[in-house]
Length: 489
Image (cartoon, rainbow, N blue to C red; front, top):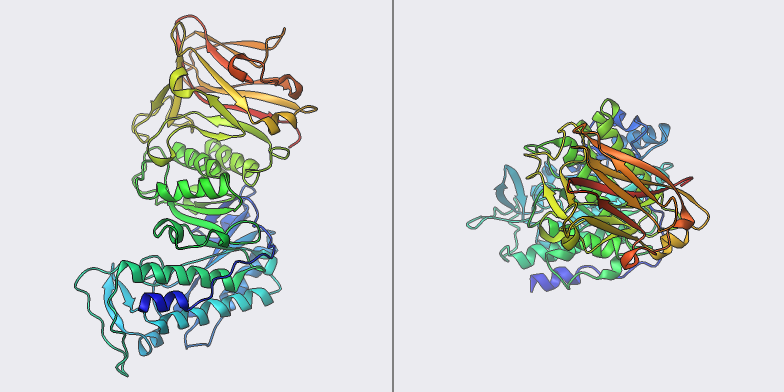
């Protein structure tokens, strides 16, 4: 009965009003605000602690929020806004029962309807303040949080007990996964209803993936909420890649936008390639706003490999449905595992990858392909002359190709330069439409750049391909990316 009551607590209506999209590209999280001044950072993060901003029930202190919004406006950047609750306000335990601790964080009886009332007061007050702020346009989005156990957690262990409030209040209903999902559903809808359409809001992907069929897809799309996720990882994640696939289907192949944060970098091997390939994953999903921890983001100031990854993200993010405005098209060559296995793509596909090339893997960065100082070699695909896997073929999205009619492009092919073999890059069958690249055994990743008139991509190569890369002789070459970059975009 309580689950039904929790669902009935809010009226679920989709908003049709349009709301501004956040700036696309790289966002800094968990670092000093000053890090957001870097030229390659599009936005920062404002975190608020519930116990600080609501020291007494319905008495709010927004001074820190106002100060940070003013700062970001002064540097010409936007910021995400989030309310965390690592510590709960002391007054909360006078109105809601306490059910022990989980991971050293106090557990309120959050399935009590009183707790939903308290959350409504908090989120409604935040929304009202942001809408009235002179810095509303500085808010990139509000990052939703369940704020049940700490900020992120919702599950209780078996054997928990709840201590009533001083007045003796607690609900009799026991915690269950259905109770958890009902709360999650309601709190996400609360953020949606309170923020939109004036303030962009990002809702957790879990609200759709953990209880399929119960959360309306009408919450998403034009004028609706964005999707958000945390714990993004280019290395195998058999649980979290369900969120990645959901984003791919609803963002890249759908009509909504997304904001995503990375998993902890602790224990990651070869961080320079992990960062780069994780960014390629986000772009493949269609993520508009890509968060990076400040301690990694700052490396873009001194390490050109990190900077190049951030610049690539800033160039392409937000153009997932925009072939006419996209700065280019590309295929990042890999196999990988799990729900996101296969190449990452952007208005270009590799034809028959599994039968025309051989995937190469670094074992999550443990055995890098090529120099460990370069960002490319976490994944690759190999072709070998004189075999059935000697040629890779690539086809451009037809709309992207049509929009190239009067454009100039640069055809870029990134390869590992080992040995002294050669390969051909072709974009047509006419004179001058094939270039031979001879390797010089530098042992490093190289990118060849070939000027090509956009009108020359016709899909006239074998199998309807626009581009082919063919190994000559009997040598082998590893390739990481094929990109068509459009001048002036």
